[in-house]
Length: 237
Image (cartoon, rainbow, N blue to C red; front, side):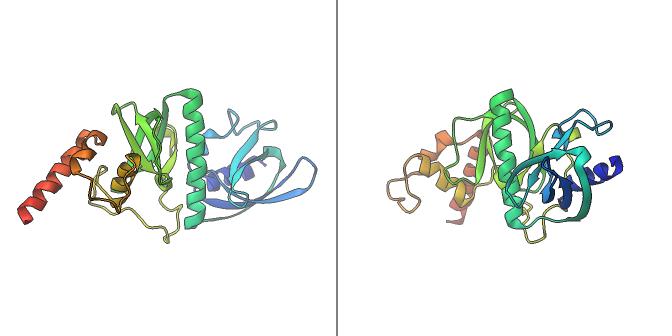
C-alpha cells in the first residue's frame, strides 16, 4: 500500500492521474486529479505510518478539492498532460488557495512563470486592488516593496524554491507558451486597458486620455520601459 501511495503522489505532482479509492460508505470512487503546484502541502507529517492521514487533491472532473483516507487507495492509473481548460481551472483553484493562505498567514511564498518564461519566486501579501479583467492576480511584493501581478494561468505553486518542483511537461503542447525576449514589465494592450479601466476610461475612448495619466500607476521599471518606447517612437517620426 505504501509503494502504491508513493507512486500516486509522484504522478499527481507531475500531472493529471486517474485512480480509485474506497469512500467512507464503502463504495469505490474513480477519480481524476492532480497535485501539480501543491505537492508539498499534503496533509500529514510523513507518508510513512500514514493510516490516519488523508490526501487532499484537486479533482479535475468536479473542479474542486477532494480528499480520501490514504489506506483506502485501491488502484493508480496512468499519468497524462493537462488540457488548456484543465490547466486554467487548476491554476484558478490554486490562486484561490493562495488568497486564502495570504489572508490567514500574511506573507506567503509562491512562484509563477513570468512573461519571458522564467520562474519568479516571490513573497507577498494581499493587495487592495483587483484586476478587472479577471486574468491576473494582484499582490503586494514584500521583497520588491511594490504592487505586482501575474497571469493566473502562469501560477506554479506555493512555497520556497526548494519545495516547488517545476515540471514543464504538465501542460499539453496546445497551451501557448511565453514568448522570449519580453521583460516582466513589458506593456501589452491588456495592461493599458486595465489601468484605464480603473480610471473609468473605456479603451475605445482615447480623445480625453493622455499618457501622463498613466504615470501614477507605473512602477520604476514600467516607467523606464514607457520612456524607452516613447523615445524610440519619436526617432521613427
